[in-house]
Amino acid sequence: MTDTSPLILWFRRDLRLGDHPALTEACAAGRPVIPVFIHDQVVAGQGAAPRFRLGLSVAALRDSLKGKSSGLTLRKGDALEVLRALVKETGATAVWWSRLYDPDAKARDTAVKAALKGDGIDARSFAGHLLFEPWDVETKTGGFYKVYTPMWKAVRDTDIRATLPVPGKIPAPDTWPASDNLDDWRMGADMRRGHDVVLSHCTMGEAAATSRLGAFIAHRVADYATARDLPGVDGTSGLSENLTYGEISPHACWHAGQRALHDGKGEAEVFLKELVWREFAYHLVHHTPRIVSGNWKEDWDAFPWNTDARRKEVQAWQQGRTGIRFVDAAMRELQVTGRMHNRGRMIVASYLTKHLMTDWKIGLDWFAEQLIDWDPASNAMGWQWAAGSGPDAAPYFRVFNPVTQLEKFDKGGAYGKAWLAEEYAKPSGTALQFYDAIPLQWNMSPDDAYPDPIVSAEDGRKAALDAYEKRGF
Image 1 (cartoon, rainbow, N blue to C red):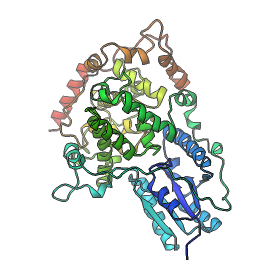
Image 2 (image 1 turned 120 degrees about the vertical axis):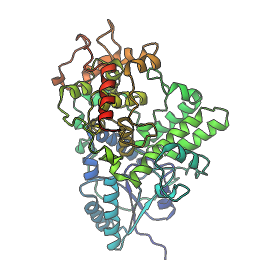
Image 3 (image 1 turned 90 degrees about the vertical axis):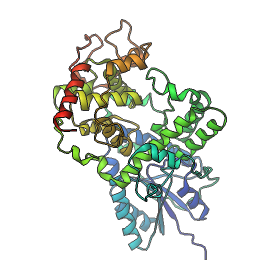
Image 4 (image 1 turned 45 degrees about the vertical axis):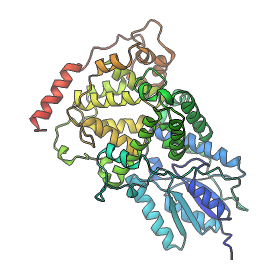
């Protein structure tokens, strides 16, 4: 006999309908499908900006499901308790979800799967968040990759599965379980004054993500290798925000990049490399989960970084008033948009960990609070790469000069003009938005004089290299 009991589909960071293996198979099963999103401890533990942006993505998914005559049941609480309650309420005999790979999600999912299977429930996880499962990519000797370039060479010619279409129909249950009201969760409450400012810079939902990818491939990917390094130019895909919440799949991005490459847009390969860089981050998180909270290179545990997040120098870094224009512009971009240009991320991370000799975990935590495209793997690997404690083939002695970097990559001064108000008689609108977004207690005004450097580029570099030499690195 055909099983006609409902199937619960637990959405997490796969908030789309297209190219969704778990959803595709659920719809093919011919059973009623009950999509569910749970505001559990993992969600509650996210920073203000990621949680706010996640709420927007959940709302977009809810609307997409409505368009398919389906729905999204919202519940708050411990994931296992919520799922068990829903199983009891609906008579569901299966709970399916898409896999995640960071330590917190893996611990939760492992416990949930074991408990539900013990209850006699078909608890099943599917791929979809990554191009490659981390355990499927191995070195020739059977180990995992610790350096990016060999991994790229190993996977670049891999046959990536085709994308899956949006299901034509999502079978609905006769009766829907009760649902929380998304507005009652107040997922953006901790954004405070920055809520509306950052919201104006968000591009959320599957349809918007697909359009963003299409525009990038059509108009910008041909110049990507050069333009992506210019913070004052709209030269990147912007898709990190959408990939974070699964509003678009990495497979869709990969195949779009491959088509561009075959159409003669050679710089599309650099875009494909960036997708594999994301894969590399999750590869490391799976094999060495310590990377998300401790030094990946354990011999750095004794390095004498300053660990006081309340130091005035750290606060100046957070507030974008270090007196170093590239650092300050990037930190203000973060406050206004919830994102930061990738070169800016490298510069502010290098300045904090090397010029200010501050523990990378302080920067990691600040980004985890502020980024709308926060990703547990990419954030951890990025900070450790910059600090020197991570998987970098040219590690600690790389100390970016933030002054010459801005001169090189922002020759026309567009980036500085976009984000720094103090130096201009008529500041840009985005530079002024910064003052609408920041906490009032920061006591900053566009009429302030621009500060002198708290640590100059030259002095910071010398101090960092001296510290490395003393430690025998």
